[in-house]
Image: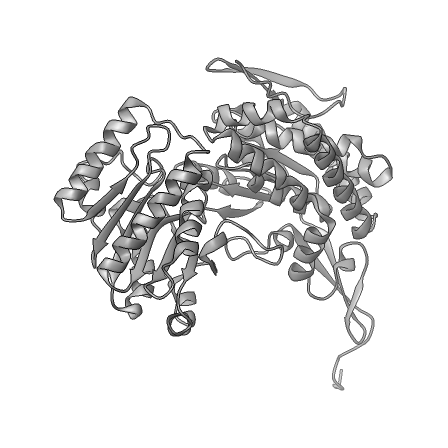
Length: 488
């Protein structure tokens, strides 16, 4: 069934370009409409920035309440099915993801994020704030902002879009085809909030899909007056977009949230029932397509302990994964079976599912990963096609963990990944203390408990950056002289 990818606007001055993309008919914002939108940006941002930051957050709080009411009433049952179809994830996972939207729009979550991004005082987002005696800051919108979001989840597009709007920016969001329906539905709640501030936020938001060879997309990147382009994704699109942005005479800032992955580290002392379930859950959520998903693991201890742990993880994968079906095509299944056999021939132990709807695989290797050895003969078994698949490498040397993490992006099996984003730990206190000061030197951005590698605190930066501050610039004001006594 074709999707409706019509941009979210009722503005009569906005026109669309009709583009065929496979069986879908896509309606993009036209170049002429984008020019009109961006020409109004200063007035739109001036109006939005004249409202208090607290009033802006209140609107999002109300949006979250509306979303929850609609969700609980069953209004989004069809959306769950649609998103399951477009993303390939199970309906249970999509229902779980929709429950996260309220948290993303929560005033408390947004305020905590802003407080971390602007430690002086978040009221600097609507007025001058005194930072020291006679010295003041004000944080102004750096927009218009153009966000090109990823398609591996519904939540990532909501994060920068919410922060861009709440910091006062005119915002143009390009979702992925896979999450367009969910993203659009989430921001439709803005239309249901009354008042001046809600209207200012509505006037500042445009959501539109653009095909890869779209003239509208080329205009936004190469010629428009956008102030910031925020790209979420991998190559070759990342490099192509960067090249186009570099040619723009307005010199927009280009911020990238690139392809990253996760590593889990366990040891014999903690390898019990709880960590086994925790690892299984993080493998299953989003089928390891998040930047935080564990796609490689290190087990510090004895091989027998690691084998028993892997077997236990498999039992939890059977139970939890059985409620979250993930069907593979015949070609994908054959590729997986060939990879399993090749890894076994290399001396590793392979645990696997007997279910075609839940085809998980756990590999246990001693000291050296086996997966890299088969990638040359099976390049299609890359990180993006390995779902519900994890290799656990066993070592008795805790000090090898930092080097193990640093090596991940250099390995053939992880080609296309920039580096490790998340390290999930389930270690004894002694091993944790032995590693903690060394792990930041690996380049990883996050160190979390194994149990919820996928969860983000409102205080967290995103891939080492505070998004809210990326979308603003600081105006400095001083009302006292600091010139030393000099002869003029």
